[in-house]
Length: 117
Image (cartoon, rainbow, N blue to C red; front, side, top):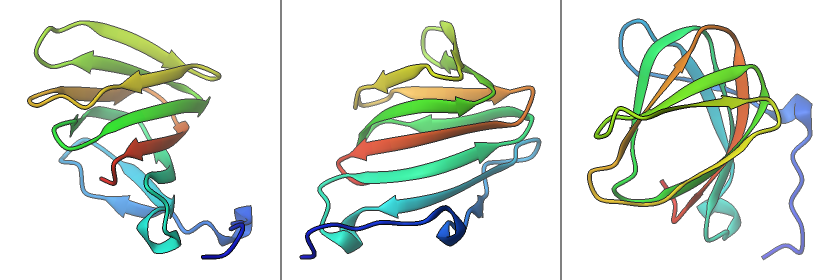
């Protein structure tokens, strides 16, 4: 294993993730299994979207909002929280947990999942 990995901004290659009609999300897993990491770390961008659902059956996530605002809604409880620039959120792994990500504008965030997603 190398002692350090670095990815320059120009090397990021965000890819479209199919998340359903009315949604638009791009992301890139930057570090993960390929580098021998026990987690996945990446960057994501969301354009105005109606509701991108992520389940947390197999992993938990920590995210930091870098730009914009996202509404995070727990599908089971209906509780919604705003996730804005500079905010950090931890979503624990839990069977059946589904969080719906909505955005009315461009939003960029970084994420780490454990274990890998």
